[in-house]
Image 1 (cartoon, rainbow, N blue to C red):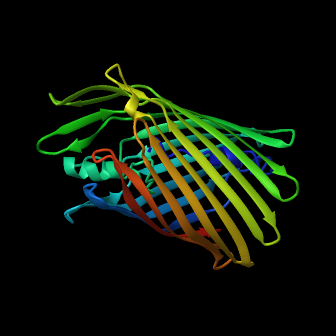
Image 2: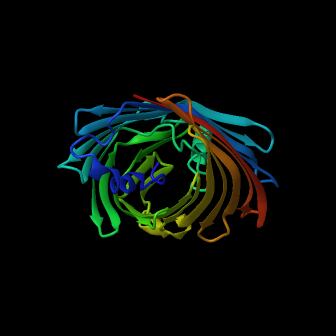
Image 3: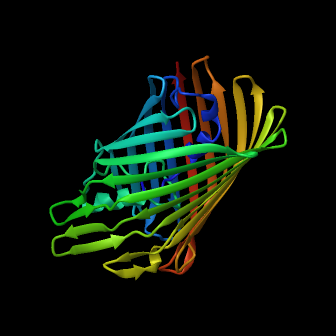
Length: 374
């Protein structure tokens, strides 16, 4: 959950808010659901044959008066890992539920937010199931749902946007508190985990270039206080996760019914420490880039072929690489009902540090989302 960061809110604040006056950030009811599926197949003796996940997102956004809006998000998810012998182990259920209240401060440039994580998901697993859950949190594979559940948590934040010449610039900061829980609990071993506070700073900027192009830039920095964990006589201590930095770039160029889009982000995780000793092997970087070429075939249909690239660079050894080829389709069914469908395939590899060689990876992704607005 900590590594899935985005600057979307800040980048949006820099544009639409100036035209909304004292109204809520979201002024219409919205409901979104759909189906997501992602699978990775592994070859050449990694000890794992595949890792896959499907999920059903459930999102509701509601305006509350002229200055507030509320959104509710949860998922129903199923994750599965198959080992090289064909044995499958899975975890499934409802995830935690996030409630977020947004309040427009003053006239049109600042938004305060209060988010609450309700522990409606499964948060304690057997040791074997915990291995499946941990596989879904990989920064490189980037599954849609990284965790079924944690504990009660509260996040408070403030975002501010202002014009600066030809640019729109947005700033945001937030602090998150999360309660302790037991991620591993079975007859032989119990692990208790008490997460530290998380602080996050964001800056985003965008501008129009000429009459057809737009550029978006973003930077996020996250820092954490010390995590504490205990497991009887087996595991006891504390861990400092190290800071995270995410840089983002977006560029769009439009001519007629065609739009070329470039999106890229780089996630960099600094080294942490365990019980006061530095852990340089926790450093990593994930670079992701994607090109899309969208063509509007009708007022209610846009087809968008795409190609993507992802590079994982952990500390100490070669990590992995993925290429992506796919197509998106954005469609309108009625004035209130619209959707997005996506299909993706891609080859790649991960480095097998035990055998000191590359192991081939194949990726498959399918998704369909429907949104209703009134």
